[in-house]
Amino acid sequence: MTRDIATRRSGLANHSNTLLNKTVYRMDALQEIISTGNWSLSLPLSCRDIQLTESLLTGAGDARATDLESPRPMLRLRVPMDQQPAVRELQVTLMDNGISLSIDGVFGDQTERAVKEWQNTNGLTVDGIVGPATWASPGLDEPI
Image: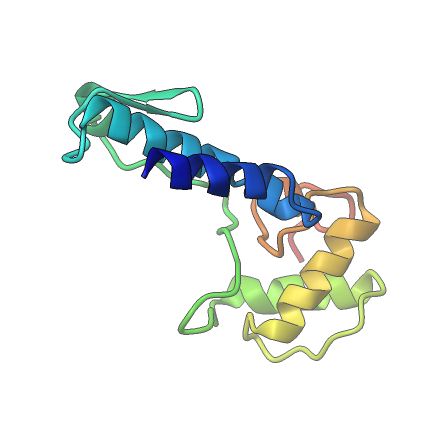
């Protein structure tokens, strides 16, 4: 099994698709589990230089991807598709800033494409997720 993991790791690390190069850590993590025999994933456990401990996982509250002070939610493509008022606000603002899309109040494929176009144009991480950095970008930073 160790040889198979090493072969797969090498294939990922040297693949012409650079996105696959970024997944090498998975093979490293699997090899560590095999080496330590930690099949139950007992804590503490480390992955990608992050140490997971029981105290970290049993904190006082849930981790959130958005700032609790932020009046704007994180928006992204999901099932079922998001239809909250902030989606329509986002669509109107994107259209007002020159991004072509229909305003239907639904965060679907068209809105994700428009968000990625906005992110690319504004030098943001192009992931289609409207989080704090995207909301804070010039043009989207003021509520309508």
